[in-house]
Length: 220
Image 1 (tube, rainbow, N blue to C red):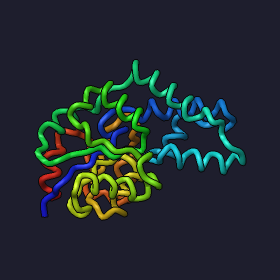
Image 2: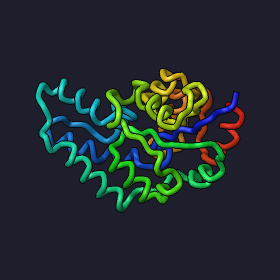
Image 3: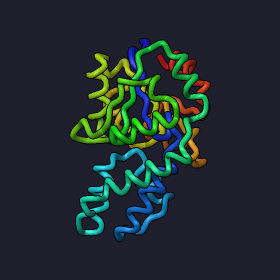
């Protein structure tokens, strides 16, 4: 079997943004009475949609976060992006080398995805096939976003290969019936990250985007 579609996660796969996003979330959550470090955000919410992360936090603190919470996180994230964001090493060349149709399926908001890909110089390589968890009822680790992306791209789930860096993302893609390649080359990845991705169901793990075209060919 060969693949008909490559689905990329965004944060931690295309743009090296997870550390930045975690810092923005930690600062904002702490300010609103949920003390947490960037590392704590990374461990608890990596790959989880903002909507689901908010639900978890509100259930633990026993009250709703303010209506301005998402706007505050977005403002902090985008301000950090301007100074610190970069593309994952060699990912632009890897995308260019792929002849298969490709798209993005990210837990981020459309504005965040657009801004991140633009800052990293990758937007034109992937537009307009960019999908957000805001377009489905349930974000990762549910399969909804991956199934939505496959439907929009007219591809059968079993003929899709997903590139993911989070356990939530791998879990969701596997639940959708897709093959997953686990990437652990982002600056947020710890020594145990590769094993966590394998345990979640990644068929192959890798840390260098220069390997991607060959890995997709072999996995297919």
